[in-house]
Image 1 (tube, rainbow, N blue to C red):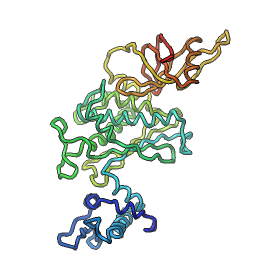
Image 2 (image 1 turned 60 degrees about the vertical axis):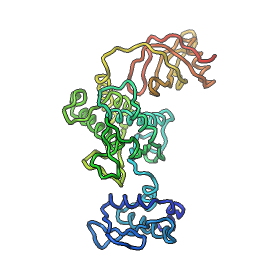
Image 3 (image 1 turned 180 degrees about the horizontal axis):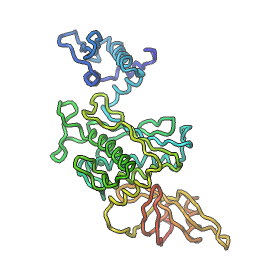
Image 4 (image 1 turned 120 degrees about the horizontal axis):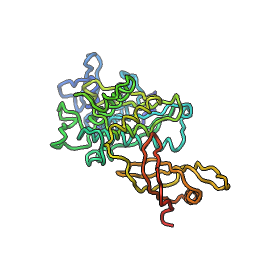
Length: 383
């Protein structure tokens, strides 16, 4: 890419301190001395390679000098200059990518319902991982305050073509140090990683642990983890189940791009692939990790997502209806209930009016779509 393609207004916005941190993290060391407002760095493995970083934005040559630095990073790392520029403009962050691979996603599009799941389900996975970092358990009835704070700080990045990919940007410095979370500042020189890095590495390790345990048919490695192994929660398994591809050859791929200003100090899987054939076993793990209490009756409110009815012998429509509901702790999920002819007609009217419905029954959890058994009191809300 020619240098003229870099936006000079964006170059002007770069924080010199961010460029210095980037340089230190990518094997540059600063040369001691006074160089008239320029910070000079040399490559650790190539003393002939010299980098100049302007100290102040007010310098008349700030933009041109910063542009040369960006192009130099890009050349050495074999990256697009605009990608380096984006890294320098954003706060230090890990990026997690969730990819759904299937023939239906090959053109970069997927059904709307799958797209919704590929946004909400990774959020649940990150929330489960954050809870595990704070207090490892096999199940969480509700999210913890610091975990919610972390989630609120994350950002949804631009989607990518080639299968279907969603990006989740996780800023490194989110949760301030607390007694129950030993955390050093990203820039303090502490060996203890930031809370966000603990969450992202824990998620990748946990996913890899699940895949290896299912592959080797050793479920007990997840349900009764050995010392030093990741504590996997039912919440994480359930988040994965909602991403399950419908095609027999489908695949969910989760990959991590670590912040270049703070690479991990230990080996962590950068990519985990979950074939569709693994999901029945993951469902079994989620059931075993959940508390032993039996299903309880509850009331659910949501909007009609799908009508699957058929005419009965009297010619009236009845049958299965999918409802998108918000359960406890903002848990968005799809439930399926088999409705009588009268209730199915109510569902059709609610669907046409985009109004909410309410139903009471026993929730039976399952991969992707849960079921309501013994339903009653199905009606439109506010009518």
